Image 1 (cartoon, one colour):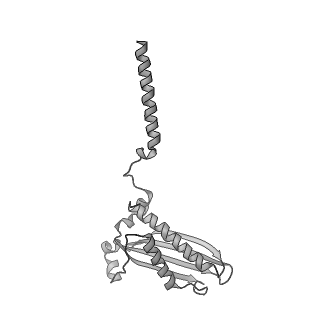
Image 2 (spheres, rainbow, N blue to C red):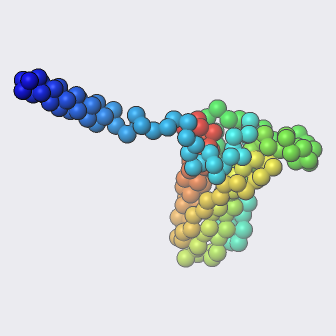
Image 3 (cartoon, helix red, strand yellow):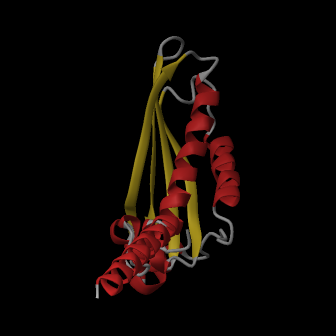
Length: 182
């Protein structure tokens, strides 16, 4: 009888150690719920309806034009960064924007990205605020993020471009996470 209990204890220890080793090797993902929504899918649910982007633009405020920033150049740069960061999504401006906005169903299928660059000062220091707003045309301000900074007339244009790059990359991550594609 004593021999049988020792064999049972040995077997119990072996199984316990075996289960612990398997759990440690597999990690916490074994117990994670794959269907559980991520935070982005809750906060940015409007991204799920977007089939393409129709508006991608930059606006300038303050002294931005005085220090050499150009709306058209920054819009082209933003659209290039969009192509790099939003693989698989395409951009085409709506033929009739007013008609598209009037139809809530159509408006929800078209994405909107807008960056506003606001600068104060014309030499040193130049303070800047760069904000991005995104969503679909039915709810264009679903996602918002911004950068603040300062610099000289010589380095602010490069800082603005770097900020736009970072903002569009962060938006892309949130966008694809909300759609459960990342």
